[in-house]
Image (cartoon, rainbow, N blue to C red; front, side, top):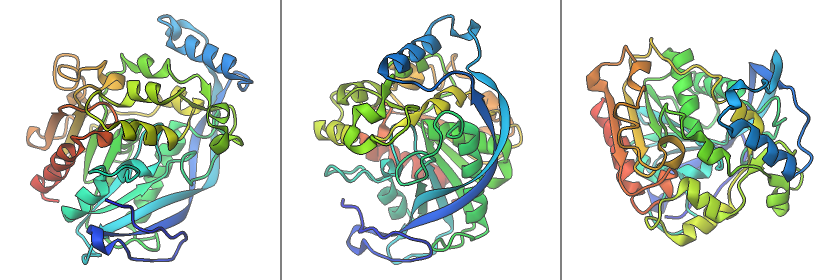
Length: 377
């Protein structure tokens, strides 16, 4: 599968990818939001030593007893430029349901349409083949979206505000190039699932259903990922990130990428190389504020699917059995108004945290889109 030719700009509408079963348009969307920023109480990192030392502090067993990394909250209002990719089935520009896709840390929106290596790595293609439209966007600080202050602005509350506003704009058909839809479901991966979960916790009326992939509400194992992240993006890949602030972080190389995202031997080695060469930094602000956004969604009644990776290190410590669906899971209690008939947990076999980058990704795609179909979307 090859990515459709790309155009840039709002309000241009260009239909292409006729041979591949879906047609897309690239959009640049100004989004104005007011959010709460937590002001950091430490000085910006000067080098990798300081970044690594800070990661060590926040992953220690006694980290919770340490000083707060924040000096206090403040309200900020900004307009951000958000790049998005809107796709519809070939020959069917108007569909009933739109899937709003939010990627996780280390990626941009291409996670949902990863055409850098030949194979079946496009969730967008699977969704459009199933009759859905998709809206994938670069989160703040990633891809072609605005690069803002990684310490005090690119934080979970601001990104939640952006997802909320994008959803409102889509529901009101305020984004030129995007069609009207009856139903709006949200699909997240990893950190994107955290934001999706938080969306229905804070504005349950905005979503008709959610799919949370590469995710659990058990944070016990987060340190396994965080311990790899004390590298300034600007020095790790200077050709791509030389102008980035020191608050934009990443991991060292493709083997650390494999450790966090890929389960051997269930992936093409070319995928590991492509994922590393095309990774995107995340911010220290995101790392520190992931736990700030609310997740309990007592008023959400739409269908919920947890689609976990069997060998997920970050959210399951390498084995999701019992973590996502057993005695160590608290996920069901977050959605008390969702009936048992609408709540589902599935563990995709033979995949790591980066589900879409494995040979068996198509199985996960089928589960996700089948879940939506079974729930009337």
